[in-house]
Length: 414
Image 1: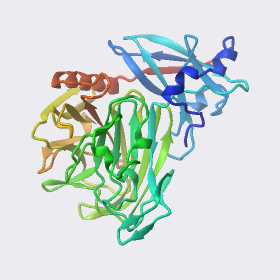
Image 2: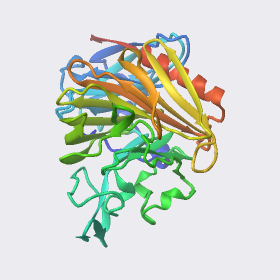
Image 3: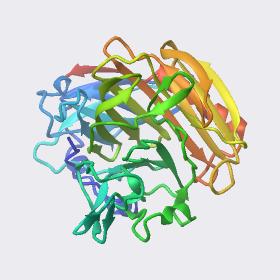
C-alpha cells in the first residue's frame, strides 16, 4: 500500500514545519532503535526496515521517529507482498562504525511529519481516445495506479506515456517498455527533484532530446538494455516477450522508496510456461534498482544484462557476498560518460556470457523459484556525476560493501 503521508516537493522543503517535533520534544519513547554502521566507511542515505509489530503497541499508525532531536524520514511499507503495510522504512546517514539511537515516539494526536519526495513511480496511459488497429488515436494521458495491458497494445501504440512504467530517485530515472520488448531504459537526470510527471507530455518521444531535466540516455534496441529480465536459451538471452497477459501496478510511491509490481501470465520460455511476478524498487539517494522476481514454475535459469556498446569498457568486481558486471564509457545518447552495472549474489551465478546484443549474466533462482539482483546507471551530467571508469569502479565497490554489510538494527521497548 502507499504511504499515507503528504509528500511536498523539494522546492517547498524550506516551508515545512514539523508539528510532531514541535510538540514532542519531551515525549518518552515507546521504543528505541539501536542502529549500527558496521563499515569502516560512512553510509549516506542508508535505509532500514523495522516491523511495526516491534514498535510501541504494534499498530502501524501514530508513530514518528527522532534522532538527535531531528525527525527521521520514514514511510510505511508492505514487506510480504499482500498489499498491506506492515513495517516502517527509515533512512539515516551514519559515520564509519557509528552506533546511534533512534527514538520511536507517539504522535499523541499530532499531525505526522512530512518529508520531501526523493523517489517516485508512475504509470500513465491515454483516455478519451480510441483504438484503430494497434494504435491509440487522440485522447490525453492520465496517471493510474494499475493497468491490465490491452490486447491491442504493442510497441509504438502511442497509448502509454513513455511506453511503460517509470521510477526514479533523486539521482536517476528508469522505465521499461510495457509491451513485447519488456526491456529497461535509463533517464539521465541533471537535477534531484522529481521529473517523470513531465516526461513525454510535450510530445510522445520528446525525452530523446536534451532538456533542462535531462534525457533518455540509453539505446536499447534488441538488447537487454539495463537489467531487463530474460532467460538464457542455447546461445541468446530471451526477454519476456510472449505472454498470455500482463498487469502492472504502482505498489509503493513514497518519499524514500517506490516500487512497481508487474505480473506476466503465461511467459513462454524454454519450451514451457510460467507466471512471473516482477518487483522493481528504488530508494532515495540511490542509483540502484532492486529487482525481485518470483516464478510459478521452475526454469533452468534467469538472465539479465547490459547492452553492448563499442565505446563501453567492460568491468568486473566482487566483494563480500556480491559481484558486478559493468561497462563505462562515452556510451550515452548524448555521447558522454555513462556507467551501467548489474549487481548479483555470487552464489546465484551460473555464468557470464554474451550474445549478439548484450553482455549477459545467467543466474540460478532459489528453491522457491525466487531471484533478486540489482542494476544501476550513472550519467556524467548528473549533479556531482561520475566521470571516469576508476570513479565508477570505486562507486560500485562501495555498493557491494553496503549490500553485504547493511545497517544493524536492534529494537527495544521502553
